[in-house]
Length: 95
Image (cartoon, rainbow, N blue to C red; front, side):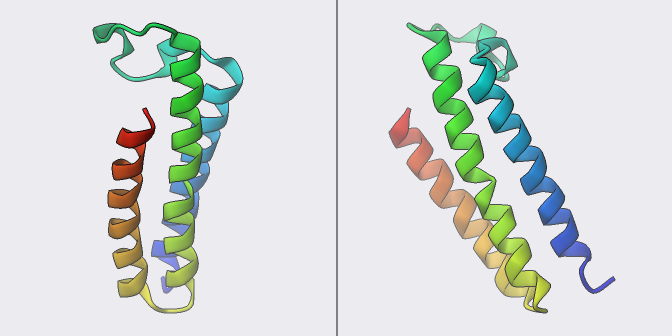
C-alpha cells in the first residue's frame, strides 16, 4: 500500500506515452479529442505536434511517481501539480 500512488502514476505515464506515440506515428487527426470542432490548416502536422506534447507531458507523472516511491508522496503530488501547470503553459505556446 505504500507504493500505490507511485504505481498509479507509472501506469498513467505509460498510458500517456503510448497515446503520444500513437498520435506521433499515425499522424491521424481523428485521434485528437474534439478535432472535428476545430479547423486545421494541416491536420497531420497538428497531430504530430500534439503527440510530442503528450509524450513530454508523460514525464510529469513519471517523475512524480519516482519521487513518491521514496516515501515523499506530498512532494510527488506538488511536482505533479506544478509539472502539469508548466506543461499546459508551454503547450499553449508551442501550438
